Length: 304
Image 1: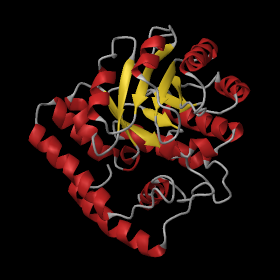
Image 2: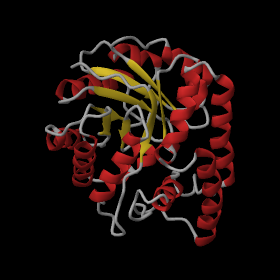
Image 3: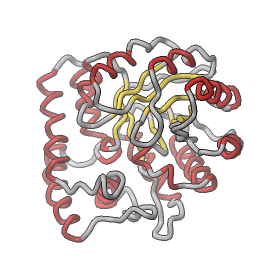
């Protein structure tokens, strides 16, 4: 299958929820439109910061259909399918086979599976997937995907690319050497967003881009125009904001609480509810976010 290439900021999308843990379909649609309207290069649904690993098949399918309907093909939409049980992966493929999405991404969760059998697993999933298949290298959530593994599967006709997490710059550059017209390497991380473009990535994922897509689009645009001074200044806005607001990770697993609260304050999400066992922000933490968010929005000229 031919996969659409992504360019620019690709948000790791939070999963909007109601207080009881059900999917908030209306907020999924609101968030999808907010992101697309702010010029993102694609959406990465059920990534690590999207709480996808806490959701069952029904929840993921419901959110997938809600986002797919709202996005309506305007940008590429990748959906996480990393269930530990292979049968559940295949069931999920069937649940969303008719959705308007662009691919699946997969974090390997069996830490004891050998490399040969893992390569076989990836190729089997890619054979059965109704959309292009992407690897997801995230050693905080699953087993490492080595250069050898990536090389071994990249020429499969339905393997379209790989997201590379982590902060090892030598590893980042090594994976980028595998990129070609049929295999895209997605960078990751708000803090190293600009660096990834500097070493050759065309698209970079970041959960913070889900909250502030306008800022990350400005960083990318300035870089593409050769205005590195502006790109670095815009990157610093995010770095300073990130340092100033509460950081509930790693005790709270991810930055879902912070990001959902920001989106709630911006009027994009109906609630800031997180999935059990994550918690929401305390009242004092929310006051800090309110103060710092007001500063950033003033610099960006609002959210339009």
